[in-house]
Amino acid sequence: MKLTKRTSGIALAVATLLTTAMPVVSAQSGVNERSIQGTWRTVVTPHNCQTGDPFTPLAGQFTFYQGGTMAEYGIGPGSSPALRSPGHGVWQRRQGWQLYSFAFTFYRYNASGVLLGSTRVTGNLELGGSGDAFTTRSAIEILDVNDVVVGSGCATAAGTRFD
Image 1 (tube, one colour):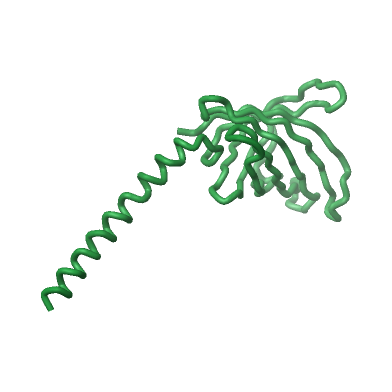
Image 2 (tube, rainbow, N blue to C red):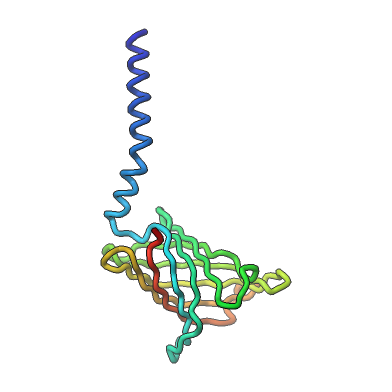
């Protein structure tokens, strides 16, 4: 019986040590890997694909989750959060530790809350040497409620890691 209590006590101590140490080890290894995983503040600049002329930039956020999924949100100046949903999508590492691709979609609504369609964004991302900044180039497709492309555009973005 003493051996069983001692073994249970050791097992509990090891389990406690592992569960309290794991987040620290995980957080440290994530930093050392230089990955896009985490939350980023972004400034997105839509522009005319043919001329390169920029439109008004907008602030937003990207979150890249472990496993290859992502979330995005951004509202243009003078717009309303009621006119679009958050974006959800996927990402993957392309080459080395600096180059990635991503794709996400969000829904668009009119002022009465009626669904107008969605927007699909696909892009390439380059993580800076410090691992705390990135730049992107993206293609944008605007779809109606039947998923027919009714417009397109281009954008660039700059992101900084949220501390």
